Image (cartoon, rainbow, N blue to C red):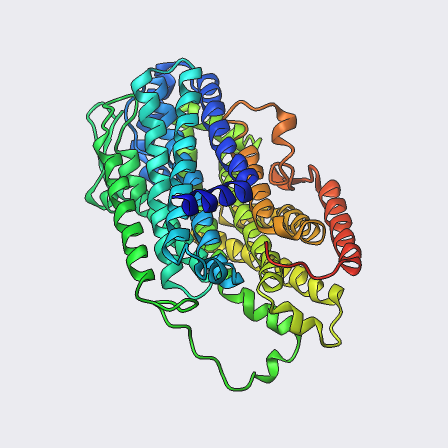
Length: 539
């Protein structure tokens, strides 16, 4: 017990700031959602009209929860529950991999395993650590609903559901850490399971059966294959069903148990999924650090491009449908105009979807620069920098390839928008709008690229957590700020909110010059600072 307590204390001291950001952000999203939705959809008539619109176009359910009535709190859960679970899931996934496969890669687990703690106690400490983090997250989410005057049972169920959803993905990440050889592979596998689960639940909801009064939706069987679907079917503040959340707990127990079992049958440093055998000699194309970084970033960039293509296709293909919906339901029109600040609904749809594209592009850039920190922490950067390659040139390769990943992600979205607009009467106009929105998001996403590079040079150990936290905060402010009733100055703190967008027949440059200045200053600062610092050890 003393060994477990010591390891648990070490994990809490190591993660206190990251957990504070994740848990505090999730609580803030719940609290802001209460006030924002009450201001935007203040009457039951408005909420009923919007739910009827959702039933008429179930594609919206790909990005929302399960409709469970027009009550104020039930409506807020419909808007926010998938994202509360997603925040808990990301927190739990990164926590699990950091303290299992991440420590194993860095050599820390070998040192601990050589003591009386062995190999099992550190994993058990990680499980306890993740459980405590999710319990605290659930309590604070429930407290946010209670502080807003919500009924007690529904509030506690909403918090319990968010925590259970996070625990499910804690188990998924623990299992991924046993399957994959690197922390990069384990994180990628866990995130892909999360993304696929999110869309499986959305598709299952979209294929469900609406009630006669168009205020409830019975999800299809497909939804029950996803932890997000289990969480949404608790129907907090409506039926208040607790048992679907218990499915999340059962999945956590199964995944965590499987991870512990697999750990006992593999060697330290090995993995269940064998690592792909490399070539005996590198290709000539890999004779430079630029080519090496390109190889490291290519797989993840392709994944972000695929998601961006899908979002771009939806941005133009759904325009006419949403325009018709907005004519029938002013609440939809007001929502889209609030999100995009555009008067034309079809332009507003393009702007909203390309804001999501900007998020994907920012993730592509941040992930590429984060690889520099991973290379440094794993010791593979040192042999490269022992050659005539300078530190600034090495970092510049990651920044340049990250920028190319951003451009390719936005370009893929534009191609998707072009494909979605093919055959539409106003397809040329929508394609033009998509082009403007795409290059605007290139600038916005580049801000996060250089900010992550600056963090890498100043505080290397915070590169990955702080880089992803900045992106998460920016998308909450930029995409959900208007709906949550946040002040305009807060919303405008997000580069996504002030990126250039189409406005009628013109281009609204918004904060273009400030964004370009931030990119230039950030890039110059990161290269200057990199010249003055030495390699940092793993943290």
